[in-house]
Image (cartoon, rainbow, N blue to C red):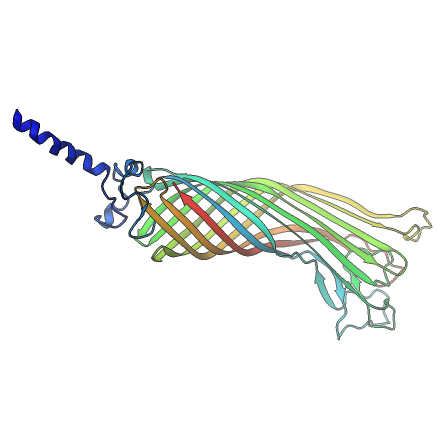
Length: 387
């Protein structure tokens, strides 16, 4: 009995030692086939007051058996380009008018509305489950940009000069275009709820396949002003799209050492929603429509609305860095720098006069709906943490 009492402190110390011992980082003391197995005591270790708290893991990467909360915030610096935003033709060295015809088509260099570099933000919050390394992730992206530009000539158009501007929209006067200016505002909001599955190809390579719901709202106000010899023409083409659909994608990470890795991502979404477009053309001079009216004319006031299926693609490439910890309240901190490209296929729809004629006696009709894609591209800087 006395011997059992003497042995009891030794037995208790043996039972208590795993609760406060050093953790085994990913890849240490495990065979490759055991990487996806979770020691049952690892999660409890994080919460114990140990002398080695918050010590970095040997391989600087998140352990393959991690489960818990994930969060990140991402700063976006993007630029937007649009296929359907051209609004004027500016003369070049080869531009000349054939005086035989009084309805000359577009001549010169086509100029489009410009949108400057602008900031956006993307935030995300998720949870990685213990079983089979599934992750549920919600994220939200907001981005807004605007821009303006103008083109002018020193003298008006005539049949004997090569100095001219030619409109792509309806111009009320139809000749003598001295200045063309555009002003554009574009905004993009998108939210995703994704279920991802992680696969460990090798100790240094991980792949994630994701599938889930996506939805949001995109809008643009595209305004053009034509300044002529006697009056100005104002064009307002505003459109918006909102809807929801499915998103699927794959991303991968290649750990190159000391926490640094190469990151790549591709995703595709099909979003079904409602597309609305409003086109209005007015002038600031009474009687400019040639009818003798004493009020400023409204040349066009049209609306378009309908169901639209928007295909989108996203490609991202970059470098990231991760530092993981043992026996700590935080499992890892992360940082990345990524280049991203987004294509919103055939989203922009602008009603235009296809003629671009110069004759004052011609009154154009809105015969063409100019359809084009919207491109958003730039750099992302991300900070994140796993708990």
